[in-house]
Amino acid sequence: MWVFEETLPSGEKLSQVINRTNENVKYMPGIKLGKNVVADPDLENAGMEVKREGPCMISSLISEQLGISCCVLMGANIANEIAVEKFSEATVGYRKDKETAEKWVQLFNTSYFMVSAVQDVEGVELCGTLKNVVAIAAGFVDGLEMGNNTKAAIMRIGLREMKTFSKLLFPSVKDSTFFESCGVADLITTCLGGRNRRCAEAFARNGGKRSFDELEAEMLQGQKLQGVSTAKEVYEVLRHRGWLELFPLFSTVHEICIGRLPPTAIVEYSEHTPKFSLVGGSAQFF
Image 1 (cartoon, rainbow, N blue to C red):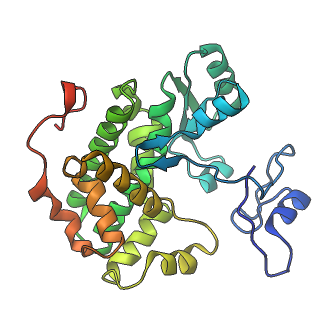
Image 2: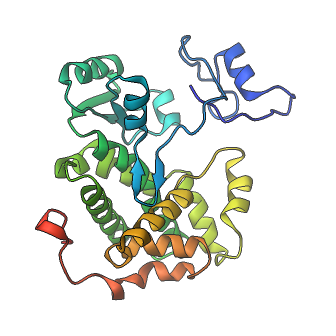
């Protein structure tokens, strides 16, 4: 298990304490991890790498470098709630080997953690990444006290842009994936709670005058935001491909994050909503 290395008040390294006590004493105190879990701070980049041409999926890198089939596990499952065995779901994305996927389901599935499998690695993995951008937008709405109707609209539009972005880059992505736990369910739980929403709410309440770096350090105490950096990387892809006008929500989130637009712009982007369908009708705005 990759761990972002930190020095605890005792002077010990977090990874060393986890390995000695079998417990993440900073982020999940009192919860024992599996005895086969070893904390390792040396692994670099445990997420999806995004280049201007498009995302390089970590599952693809693993398959290419190790010559093995790689599945992905995503879903609406906040760690602290799973740790105390509150009911939740997850989605395993696989490519061709359904038998392998079924083994992962058998391994992870419990009475309080329901796991299903879908043949769509890219769709499942992209959902787990892009939902954090939408959560930033939801946090802006909360910080500006715009209400539930506005937040629901932002979540719906965000899901639409997640689907469109994914299908434009990977035509094999299935519409049905977005109705799995990794899709709409994970989007909902991330927009209702989670670190990205909380920090974005604080950013909006301060009128964008405090940076996300400052808020991250103050509020998360060592944990990292994904939404802000992902929004930047997605923006670079959109600009490189000439798609900025096709993704007004994604574009606006990044421009607010860097101070180019005020937080209130999160509901002003609709003036620029595209009035045409995307290529081939497979990823239309509707």
